[in-house]
Length: 296
Length: 169
Image (tube, rainbow over all chains, first blue to last red; front, side, top):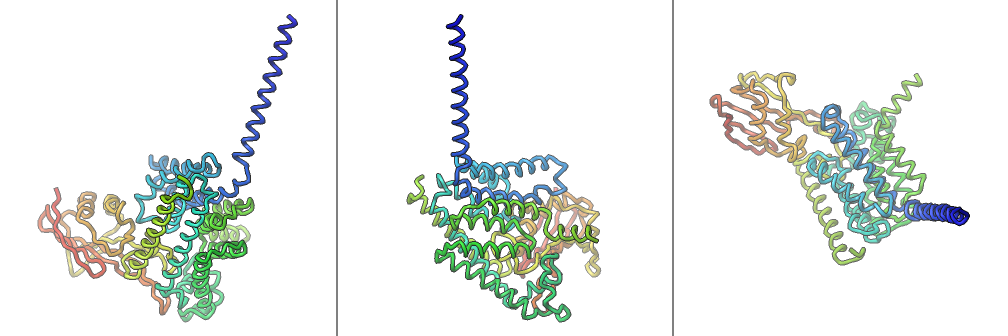
């Protein structure tokens, strides 16, 4: 009986010990695999994928489809993109998340290639290629690829604005000042709208934007990776997003720039980006109007 | 694949070259007014307002007095689906309307069978001086019925013309 008790005692303590061991193993692995420091280096890609989900939300949630079977299909696509963003956060599942994103792109984005927003094109050039790298967040080559992708984007944006001629003479921003959304009218105070001709201030802002995009392209081409430069560019992107009332493209750019600069995404920037994506869902103009109505 | 292998470098360089070629072609197509700058993957969409392309159906039975047809009396769902993979919302603004799409339009709206019709595409055009937006025609399709089973059409976009004959079952 005594021997039986002791063997039972021994058995239960072994059980406790083994369960403690497995608990420690899980905690250690949770810490090492999931919460390890390099999570902040994978967060930018998760945010980039999430920005695509928010960008597509309007299309997937169009009222015409919400009551049909397409509504279920589109909800599935939305959940899949969010899940792929989540999976891309962790070292073990990051490539799986990117593969999921590629599958969704092949099923839903590519067939709509003529109606996709230009933002989605940038995401398609930038994100899927990460799947080729075993640990993309440690790869100099992937970071270099994104750097040159941004060089192309900046030079293209500069060239397009130059060719259109509507930034050199300030006519586009002047037009937005009187016909744009609430936020796009922020510079309307500077010009007299009775003449239908842009004033000097609007011309200055337009040409500044043009030159800024060219400068960013050149600096990235040269390989400038100063965090001050990143901070100024993030500030510029947020300003542009606020003006155009279009935050998901800016969040995509910010996230990808974090990979270019190998700076990772600190928690405050991560929280800011997620907040901006939710704000963008309703649009800044809409929220401002609501606030004004509420105040009145 | 090792992260610095030759294959990987080749793929990365190829993707960058392809991206550059895509953008150069996009710039060319925008400069020659062949595409909507907001679409097809360029990075200069904030240069002109959205063109807001709209389709208007016009009754041409009396050519001297064309009459706009009430949009509540017809459907263009199947007609639009014909462009689902090729030209949604006329991103390629100079592309001609194909005979299959016109066939789908009459199959969806049998009440128009035998009626001479005009399909008019309108869009916003940005004017720099004085700064304004003007609603202009992007192009049109004129449909003339020969008998109850055949019609001729002339599609006109960006100064180019395409004609054809369509048989309906």
